[in-house]
Image 1 (cartoon, each protein chain N blue to C red):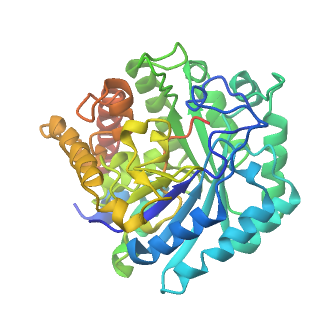
Image 2 (cartoon, rainbow over the protein chains, first blue to last red):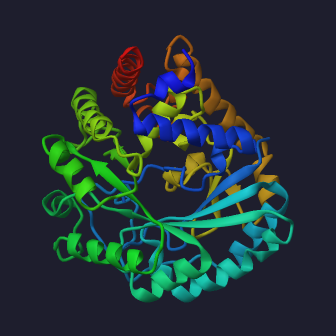
Length: 43
Length: 365
C-alpha cells in the first residue's frame, strides 16, 4: 500500500506525510526544527 | 563527535517567581533575592566555542527557573553577542521556556523583533493549572498566563505550550482536550510529571504507567478523531512520523544527549539542563576550559558512552526505533545509572501499540 492510501481519510496523517516529503526534498534534518527539544519541563 | 545543535542556558539558575508544587528544581532552587546571573563573559566564551562546535543550525534555549528574571536588556544584549556565531555562516535561533507570568508587551516586542520563540508552561483549564502552578503567595497564575498568550497573539509571536500531566490531570482528559480546541493551541506537548527527588522516590503527584497509558490513549483518540492538523501535539506527531517512515524529533526519544549541551549560571557544563544540580554528571567548567575541550574530554566521552549503553537494555524491544530507550536523565534520576529502566517504558509501549493499531485500522478502511 502506498503512502497516499495510508494517509487517506486522515487530515493529520496527510499533513505529517507532507511535512516528511518536504524534509526529504530539502534534505533537512528534523533536528533543525528548533521547537523540538523537550528537556522535560516541570517548571 | 556530533556537532552541538542545541544549547540550554539557565541565566538565573533555578531562581523563579513561582512555587509550583511539582517543580523538579525545587530541591535545588534558590530563594528569590539571591538571584545569581550568568556573566556576559561566560556567555561570550560559550558563543566563541560554538563557532567551531556547533551544527550549521543552532538553537539556544533559555531555561530556568524563570529565565525572564534576567531582564529584557540582558536578552537583547546577549542575542547581539551571538553574531559571532552567525558570522561563521551558522544560523542561531533562540527559544525561551517561561511560566508566562512576566510577559509584558515589551517582552513580546523583543520576541517578535529577534524571532525568539517562547514556550509557556500551562496545565490547561484554570482549575487544573491553579492547583499546582501558584505564585509564592499561594495564588493561582492561570489568569496571568492567559493574558500573556493574548499578548503574544497580538504581537504575532509564534509560541508553544507545555502541559505537565499529574495525577490530577488524569480524570480531566476531556476537559483538557476541549480547552486545547477552545483556545486553538497550535503547538503543545504533554509531559508526565516527573519529580526527581533526591531519594529517587516518585511523589504522589506522579502518575503510574497504567494511569498515564489510559490518559495518553484517550487524549490521542480525541485528537485523532478531531483530526485538525493545525493542532500539533508533539508526542503524537512524532509517533505518527515514525509510522509514516520518518524520524522522531524530540530529544527524549533519542536515547542520548550527544547534540545537546547545557550551561548553568556559574559556568558549569552539563549534558542537559535536567542534570543541573547533579554535580556527578557535570562535564566541566567553562570558566577554566573551552567548550570544544570540554566536549571532547574523557569525562564527556565516558558519559555519552554510558548513555548509549543504557539503550542496550532495550535492544529486543520492537519500539526502540521510535522510543530511543527513554530520556537518559529519567533513567539516571530514578536508578542512579543510565542503564536503569526508563520510568515510563510501559506507558510508551502501550501508546505505541495503540497508535500503530489505529493507523492500521485507518489504512484498512
